[in-house]
Each structure stands twice: as C-alpha cells, then as structure tokens.
Length: 482
DNA sequence: ATGTTC
Image (cartoon, rainbow, N blue to C red):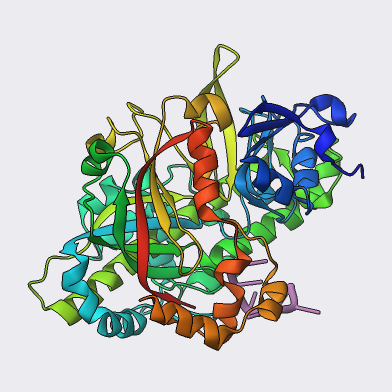
C-alpha cells in the first residue's frame, strides 16, 4: 500500500488538509484532516491516514472522508473518523462505528463551588467506587430478564427513567433522548444479550471512567450561562458505552458482512472495512441491532448517573442538591441525518467513530434550552488533564457533517505507555496536584497523560477550523477507572 | 473497547 507523505497533502487552511482523490486510483472522494500542523506531523507516523484513504473507497461515500485532530489507528477505520454514505443504498460498515457501540460522554453539573466539595473528595471517591461497578467482568446491580432486556434495547434511557433511575429532564438533555427509533431488539443475538444482561450500570475498563472536576475557566460567558455553567462549579463526567453487548453486536455483524460482501460485488483494500449496502437485509440487520446496542449504552450511562447521585446523597445527605445532566453525547455511532452537499439537501448515513456530533445553533435535535447556543460538545482529556465543553457552530454541518473530535486521542499504545510510565510515581504526582485516582497501577500507566496527545492543541484545532466554539475548561479533582 | 485468543 502506498505510503502517505507530507508532500501528498494539500493545505486547505492552517487547520484543514486534503489528500486529493487522485492520490490512489481506488479513491472515490478526497480524504481530509482537521488538525494543527504539529498534530498532522504526528498523525503521519502511524497508519491512521492509510486507513482514512481506505475509507474513501467505500461504496456510496459522499464529499470526503474526514479525520479529527485526535485521530489514531483503529479497526479498519481510524478512531477520530467521519464518513457519510448515500441513503439508502450506500455502505454501512461496523468498523466505522467501532466495537464499543455508542461509547459516549455524559456531563453532570452540580450547584456547588469547588471549595465546598474539595474536603469531601476522598470520601466521594470511595463512595463512587462503591456505587459504580467497574472493571472487566464485574456484574452490575441487577440481572435483566428477557422481557426487561427487550425494553432496554427498544427504549434506551427511557427504561431507566421509568424504573426511577432518573428524570424526564435527563432524557431531554440526552442526544436523541437516549432512544434511537431504528432499534429492533430481536436483531440482537442471544450471545450479545447474555453478555449484557448483568452489565447495566457498569463502567467497564480501559479508558472508561467517572471523573469529578470543576470549571476552571469560562471562555464564552453567554454560552456557559446557556449550559448552566459557572466558574468554580463542580462537575461529574461519565465515559462509557455498551459493554460486552455492543462488542458482540459488532462481532456478529462483521462476521456476517465478510461473508455477505462478495454477493454485493464489494471488494475493499482492507477486510476490516467489511460493509454491505445500508438497505440490504444484512445492512438493516446490523443497523437495527446497532441502534438497540446504542440504546443499551444510553440506558447504561443513565443508570450510572443515578449511581453518582446515590453517592452524592451518601456523602452530602438525603436532602443535598444533586448533580443535574448538562448533556450526553455519543461518539461511536451511525445515524441517518440530513446535510447539504454541494447545494443539495440529502439524506445520508453518517458514521462517527471516535467523533461526536456538533450541530449548530437552531438545529431541531438540540434541547430547546441549548438551541440558541448550539449543541454541547463534550471532550474528555486524558487522566489528570483538562476536559472541555464546546458548542457546535453554524458552519459545522458544512465541514465534516456536523462532527467534532471526541477526546485527546491516544499517541502511545498501551504496551508502550506501560514501558514508559512509573505508575506509583505518577499517582503520587497527581495526588500532589490535587487529583485523586482510584485505579490499578496498570491502568494508571496505560492511561497516563504521556500516552495521549495534547488536548489543548486538539481543541484549538477544531476551534480554529470553525467546527466549535470553546465554552469552558474543566480541571479534574478525582477519577475512578475500571 | 472486549467473558483482554469463540
């Protein structure tokens, strides 16, 4: 496969780059990169742009294949990638969504200033750890019956609210109200359902976490006020997805599509890009199962938000003011959306893998209370570094189908990070800086700040590209990890 | 990411 060099890339702006469709004969559209130049140089070192060029060969791909500044290698598609295909018969590819279907981020805001909470941080961490099951194979607080699982897969976060694990307001401030209408529970395999039956309300492992932090700096006062944020305010960030259930849905679909692809005459440069036409039986089977797995993930984050509130009550008393939901946004998902392409309004299938939605002001899918601001975009930093709240702009739809980056983005493999990091020392350093961690030394090494790109530079890139406006920066106080 | 090689 042809290696990509800097000289193959055209600068469209200081933060926007293109590999033209003429680069390789099988490209249907150009490949574009949103990144500040030093990040682009880092990106050139791994296979992520090779993978991006491969994505441009998908049947029915429109406009361009995109990556965000936090891009790194993934399964088939790069993580940090966005691709839209023509509705209804363009490709749907599980590799463009990822194994952790509807991995995403939920931000809660408290009414409390940091000075009121700081003395209670150690107690809060241990209570969060008690309430929120984490790690591989750790079961949650309930085992779903077949009927309950059907309802969770069909109704998502609504199920949790109906059971008392949240409020109507929580649904209002969740992307798609925590329920994708395309879900068909019967399309989720027996094995996937078995893996998920005791996983609701669990965090998982890897880079998944619950973090307590506070608003360190406000960038746009009006937008911050629109989201109910103020300087010094304590926040809680939840990052997790659909656990073993979503992983099994992806595994089932990839196996099925590898087998079905030749029947549709599709051949691609990488078998990890396995895809079928969206409107084919195999495409619909996957899409309906993916929507159901996405609903499971929204229900999971809803139950975890309830667990956070339980921890809050245990520490601050039954009558304490509880964290409220600011927003919940997916960053591993495919959705049917309407976008303007070359002056034409078209329905498209948008794949976002390690990329969040970032719709601009006035869009009907943004909660009414936020509509004038644009959609809240949540960017978790790496462990011990800042996270950001951003707002989608009016231009975002015209760039990468209304999408933005999803985090700092890994720059070292887990193995490389473990070799370079002394976890006990790092833990002490973070504690000295006022950041408490409840995680194994192994996890601390794998998720060390050095293993990630500079989140400030990543956020600067998407801001300068005009996709988002900066709203606030959050500083961590404590995190629990699986 | 993941019953971390069904």
